[in-house]
Length: 368
Image 1 (spheres, rainbow, N blue to C red):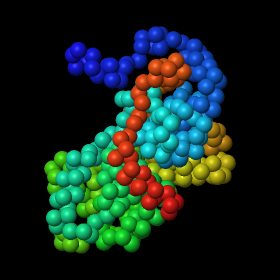
Image 2: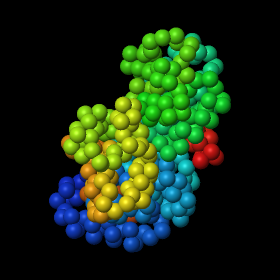
Image 3: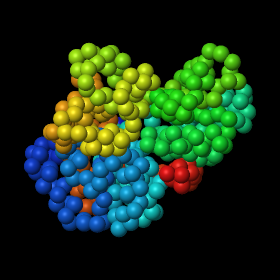
Image 4: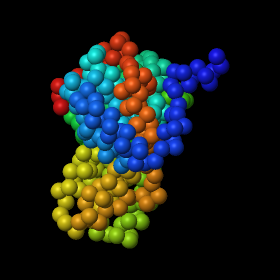
């Protein structure tokens, strides 16, 4: 058996027959499996999913909410997570041993999560401890691998979401003098700044150079930001905002805190995906909005609020490419394989990793 055969055996590729089916046939197959399996199947769908997939979701939400809902649906033997890999891992960590989590396409990863490996984090921790000693607490955005969540849990830290990041950073500073924030530097910087920590007290750890990027007295550092980012949200720029202020001066601008600090600073509002959705829902009829977040979600918000003028802050934005790997053919294939007793793409977090990762999640959840 050659390497390619071994990879295909571990994670089989989509059969050609699913590529040849019409949209109507694929939709009928998905509806059929959902009907026959009933409560034994739970299908969570992330906000950034394509419409062709999200229409079949039993629940919509962000990654943590969907993982929690998966755990609450204990009648569900199979959870087909329409999101990306780290989200399915979190669902596996929180669900029961008799429940099984599947990802329709194993190529659906997250570039941000992949910017912090366990090996890189362990090297960074060792280097930082050599100077700062035991004064650092690690925090990780839930948009991280199970291995990183486990590392954070092992060393007394917790996970954070874009909704509760401020509360969790405040808690972290009751535990230690400094924090290491993984893997999204922008969420960490925006959160710390909103809490009154000056930019001059924030440094960046570059995992590729294995180097702390900082100018000044190193002992004044309070926040160490991992050099990672969301490839979608980093594409919203100051130039986008300046152009809009010139052409549409009355338009409200709302962005996700995964955007760069200067973009958040120039916007009218910023907040989590749920905050953005709720803000638009409660906005008055006829109001106008430019939204800085993932394009599938922006398009869905536009469709659901025809009484408002809504555009993307960056007109050249594309959807999250890794999230978009979950499509209707892969969903139909995954569901039929489960029903036929030949499931593939099982997401399984090893027990030793899962226990510490759950500890990091629980430290957050008890404060939520």
